[in-house]
Every structure is written in structure tokens, then in C-alpha cells.
Image 1 (cartoon, helix red, strand yellow):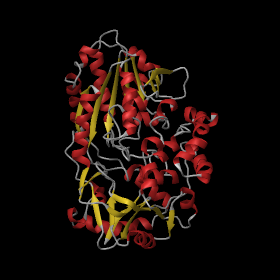
Image 2 (cartoon, one colour):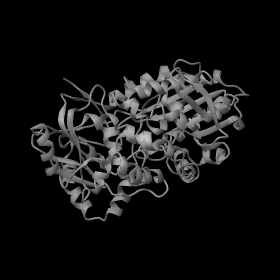
Image 3 (cartoon, one colour):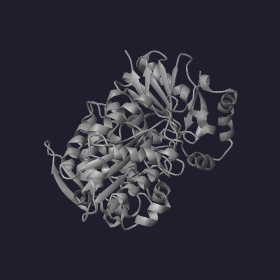
Image 4 (cartoon, one colour):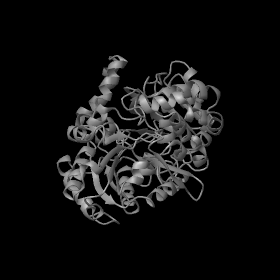
Length: 516
């Protein structure tokens, strides 16, 4: 059977055994149009869950800190105006009406240890009016290495260090505007991680958190999320936090590209033709042009619902909405998973995906996108299809390149790399300078994404990379290599004894709800 999927910046029709199963995301739920989003935002702040209305939380003397996501979510980038622009513009109008002085309002992008957003990226997200009014003196990226702005909040009952930006403690109210694409994000993670330092992120982004439990991508049963919640509650004791959570629907593709994420049974005649001819057409184009074409796509995401209020009152509603959009019932576990990986990662916005992110995207994200149990049986095989070029963005992925060249050359085992290399990278003065002043991910960041693969690296019997012309890249990543999909399937068959194959068509994204 044919499996229409990504292969980096290419689309292909891969051949799978006829008995294979291919799963797709649900159609997008109806969303709130941008013209109505301001009204929904105002209604949410006027009627928050578990908290008094916004007008009762502020007055003429209030200092307010408005936090928002970086461009890791939702990704890929949405069309203009960005939803955060609309929601924050309405929030500012409300604050002014309630007597809050402009001089007492700060806006901050909660980048954590991600790369900082450039001015033009902030402008795309927030719009000209907000930039003109607040940037750069009252609008900035969080800086986890800025000693003048970092404060120690305390330690949790498990001795986990909690640090954050001093603006949180100096504010009378913190408002987090959150556009949530998957259950990994939002809730207690927003402030505690978004304004977290290395000292406060290292405890939960650790292989210890995922060695025995695969739950990373959702809070239920997750050691990682439990640690984050402990930290968040400590911060909440110091400053009230009001969250505005917009749960996103699955409308990733604009209308003319929706056929990419749909099964043939839901495609019209023209869309089925496009699935036949698009791979051949794209193959005629140079790689650099394919990259530009696919990176230029702007998504049609819309919020399913917008809720404001206390984290414990709002976030369960968000998770329920996410499950309604994301949950795909799958009748059983399989022996082999085949996945065609696009040149896409939340950590490669405005960049090509690098080899470290190829492993992270599949074993850290895709493998863990389930609600109850993995889609693969224990001892199963994952086949990744991606060309996996040894390309690292010169600005953004400085630490990733060093991690690939030095750490992975010695070990791919999470606990060993944590012991031998983590502290060195986290405190390296050059990497810190690149993070603070040159738009690079923090030196610790490549470790965090690799640690999310701790459980699947132990759970699976084999990971096979199909795409590189020779095995060197695969060997550096600690995985097997096959020259083509047929050879990879044969390798998997030797382990399972059968063609028991499942393939996933993403994006749009979904979570498995595995029966049996």
C-alpha cells in the first residue's frame, strides 16, 4: 500500500506492506475566527474560572506582568494577525480601562532556555501597535542567565530549586497568554518553565524523570509534570497568576494544502491527483527551493475555546478540549512504526532541522504522543524516514552542533551524558553568551530534548534511519541505518517475525488512544 508522507522537504509515496495500517488526525474542530477572538478574550477575563474578574484584581497602582509563548507554539507559524496580538491588544485595552498605568505594565516572551525571539519575530507575533508602545523598554525576552533579573523563590518539598525573573515577584498580577497546541504545554508549565533557569529546569528535564515512565507529553502520570507543578505552586504563593488558555484546533494547513493530511477516502478527485503528482513535481525542484516553499506555509489554526482564570480551574478544560481534537482510537499495539519526518521541529523555527532534532522529534515527541500506552509493543521497531543532513543553524544551534560533535561522539546514553557533559555545557561561557546575545538555544537545551527519548531508547529494540546516503549520521546518533525503506522493513521483520506495521500521517498532530 502507498503511504503519502514527508521526507524532509519532500513529499513521497512510500510503499508499505499491504497489511499495514495508516492513521490520520481528525478534521479540525470549529474554531473562533479572528474577528471574534477579541470579544471571546474579553468575556474570558470578565468571567474567569476560580478567580475574581480582572477588574477586581487590578487598580490604578497595580503592576502587571503579561507573559506569552515564543514561536515554538503553535507551530508552524500562523497567518497574520497572530492570535496573541489580538488577545493581548484586548487585554491591554481592558487594563487601561481599569486604571492600570502603561508605565506599570511589562510584557515578556517566556522563552525559558529556547532561543530568544528576534525583533522582527516579535513584531510578526504582536503587531506594530504593541511593538511601538512597549518595545524595547517594557517588552523583552526572558533571559535565564541575567543575574540582575533572576531571583531564587525557594525550594520544593523535594529540594528542587525554583528560580524565576524578579518581575514575577515585583508584580501584583502575572497574566500568562497561552496558545496551546498539545497537552505538553500550558497549565503549571507556563510560568514555572517559561521563566525557568537552568537550575530550576534541570530537575524535571532529566533522564530520571522519564526512565521508568514515558509520560512527557501530557501531565497525567508524568513525573516531569509533577515536578513542574511543585515549582509552580511555590511561585503562586508569592504572586497571583491568571492564565488565559486558548486551546488550538487542528487546522494546520491552509485550504489548498489540506489534502496532505487527509486519507484518500476523504479526498476529492483533484486532491487524489495531487497526492500522485506532487512528489514527482517537488523532486524536480532543488532542495533549497523546496525548503523555502514549505517554510513559507502559514497555518490556519484557530482556538477551539478561550478560558481565563486560576490554573487549576482552567487547564483541565484545556486538556479536555485538546483530547477532543487530538485523540485517535487505535485498536491495538503494533510491532513496527514507520514515520516520514518533515523538516519541522518546534526548535527549528526559521531553520533546518538538525540530526539531534530528528531523533528528538520521533522518540521524544511522536513516540510519546499517546494517552494510555505506546502505540508500539515493548521491543518494537521505529523506522524514521528523513534525509538527516548534517546542517546546524549558525546562530540558533551552536550548542546542538557541539553536542553532536562531542557528546554523541562518546555516548548516546542519557544518564552517561548527564554525568559527563551536562554541567559543562550548561555553564560554558561561550554558549551562555550565544544564548544571551546571539539568539542561540541554551547550552543545556540539546540535553533536554535527548532526555525525552530516555524511555523509548530502552523500550524499543531498534531505531532505523532511512534517508542519509551512508550510515555515518545514523551511527553518530546511536541508531541503525538502512539504505531504503524495503531494507528497513526487512530488518524489522527479522525482529517481530511478521509485517505488523503502523504508519502515522503528521502533521496535523494527534495523540493515540490505544485499546486492548
